[in-house]
Amino acid sequence: MQHVEAVCRSTSLGVVIYSRANAIYSADTVARLADTCPNLIGYKDGVGDIDTMTRVYARLGERLTYIGGQPTAETFALPYLQLGVTTYSSAIFNFLPEFALDFYAAVRERRQAEVTQMLTDFVLPYTEIRNRQAGYAVSIVKAGMTATGHSAGPVRPPLTDLALQEFDELTALIAQLPATTA
Image 1 (cartoon, rainbow, N blue to C red):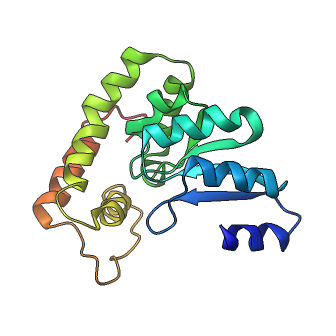
Image 2: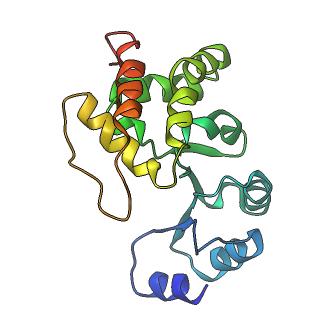
C-alpha cells in the first residue's frame, strides 16, 4: 500500500494498480488507496479471483476503470464484463489481432453464443497448451508470433520455449481459424 501511495504522490498522471503475483490487493486495500489517492484511476486484476473483483467493484463502482489482466484474459472476459471490467489485456492480440478484436467485439456486444464458439474453437485449446508447463504463458505468445510469421525470438531462461510438438499443435490450431483472423 505504501508503494502505491508513494507512486501516486510522485505524479499527477493517472495510476492503475495491477493486482498479481506478490502484489495482490484486497478490496479493503483498494478502497483505502482510492480514498487517499485521487489520481488512482484503475484496477487491473491479474489473479482472477471473482470474489475479490466483486467486492472491489461493489465498493468502488464507477470510481475506477477495471481491466482484466489474467493470462489469456479472454477466458474471463464475458463474466468479468458483468463486474465492470470493460477491457482486458489480450496476449492473443500479439499474434492474432483480428481474432482478438472480433472476440472483444463479441464480448462487448454480449453475443454469448459467438463468444462460446470462439472459446471452444481456439481459446480453450490454446490454454490447454499454455497450461502444460509453468512459464508457457510467455512461451506460447512468442510461439504464436513465430507461427504467424513474426518471430519474437526465444524466451529468456529460466523459461523454456514450447516443445516442437506443442508448437506444431499451436500452428495447426491457428491454421484452422478463418483466413480473416489467422
